[in-house]
Amino acid sequence: MKIIVVGTGFVGLTHAAVCSEYGHEVYAYDIDHQRIEAYRSCRPEAIEHYVHEPGLTSIILENHGRYLFFVDDVESVIEGADALFLCLPTPPKPDGSSDLSYYFAAARYLAELLARRRDQRRVVVINKSTVPIGTARQLERVLREYNVPNAGVASNPEFLPEGDAVEKSRRPDRVVVGADNEEDFRIIRRIYSQFVNHVRIRYIETTPETAEAIKYVANTLLLTYISFWNGVGARLAETFPNIIMEDLKRGVTADARISTWGSYVSNGAGGSCFGKDIQSLIYQLKTAGQSVDILQSVYGINEYQKTYLIDRAIREAGVSFNNKTVALLGLAFKQRTNDMRDSSALKVVEALLGRGVRSIRAYDPMALREARKFFDPEKNHLFERISYHTSVREALAGTDMLFISTDWEEFRGLSRTIEETVSPPYLVIDGRRMIPDYTELVAAGYGYLAVGSPYMPPGDALPGRGRSRL
Image (cartoon, rainbow, N blue to C red):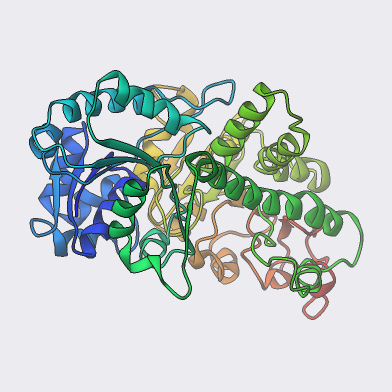
């Protein structure tokens, strides 16, 4: 099948690469010429400057020029296309609604080209972007407006977790396709032929509106799990003595009806989807006159979680951040990605600077280049207080306290590094519960504050007694 993928960000690039891996003729199109040239260069560092996803670069290198082509002129490849996948940004507006300006600008341009094509075989335009319910119908109206012949519209939402996008593209939990026309379903079945009758993967055909809703409900439910454990489980363990967070999770999720996913506790979930999608769903339902109390609570808990440890440090540990130097470990919103969109670290930096820290010494294994874009001193002179470092030890040197904001595996064994690099009095703020042998630190005179545990002052825990606290 001849496929055109419009938009080559995280979703579009991954989808284009994996489709080419299955032998489809794939043209990945973007209006960003520099991005396209970077992909064409086949230089890993150039590709990963834009999208850093484990395993993705190797697929591109293997298939480029064979099944995968990068173009900045879609008109030259539109003839003979079977499907166009729209993988475009739909960022939130201040009121929570989705900004569809990029989406419809692209849709109108493509409709104009499709109306002029000589080969008028059936072509289906497929939404992979997360778009408000009813967007597929709007896209149909655009195609009719431009008198596009023999074209259909479908919704095919993506469910790709960053850091595992390649694996989930190859072996998804489900493939959801929403369309009205059997011929459109048939085209998409051929694209996803390896999944249609799979024994494990659910291939679901439904209406476009249902497909659009599935994406929103899935992401909102995942954020609800996270917010529940942060807003209830963690609060219980922080409030009442002798509640052991790990035992609480094991005991509750031993019930087969209750998912273990999301039972970890943290300083909030970030990324490009959860916050944006729940805000959009709140807007859509509220505009329709429906109650959104539960959604607003879920969103509010997650946002509160991003900085509440700083407030706890002031309240419980008696800390003043004014004129202090803080080590910040982790800038990406989660491990295995360089993506900082809606990262908790963004709010942490804002809160620390707002409380007068002298400097922030930051380290992340992948996101340092991205961080310099987000914390541009030309946008805010306070960002001059941030310095970037290439190792944990370098970031820790000369600091008064530590904040762990991302769950990188290398942060799990930090207790010895902390002891060798900084001396008490020193506070460790663990937003991801990354230090399992925290009792050794506390016994050595360090203060320890983690999500899901009460504050542990220096000397409060001796080896063998810590399970009552963490």
